[in-house]
Length: 137
Image (tube, rainbow, N blue to C red):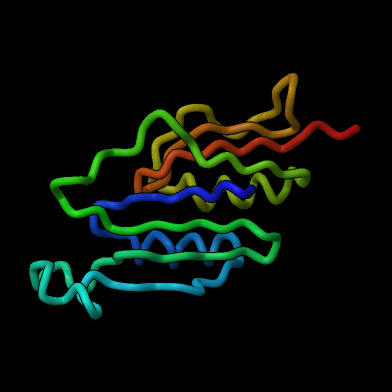
């Protein structure tokens, strides 16, 4: 069994996933809009370009999926975080710098007693992230 995060957005899913693909070196391999068949006649015209489903894969095997939730169903993400487990402190710094820009920092990236680098934050799209870079042996 494999668990993959499925992220909901308030209309900016396409922008978020293009950003995530850039940060993680990923490829968007599936994208459907609400305006595509057979949904076009079931959603308002201003939702035709919003994402019904999107999937991105990274070279190291991470899969992220998501969609734009219709306004009546969208809720700000809470009670979870997408946790990234890394072994390279420089990569942790790079990812943290990119994802946290214009976001909300809970705990800035830093060395802790359990990790070379650790951070908790939400990105500019509201997605909560944890970065954990293991201590060197």
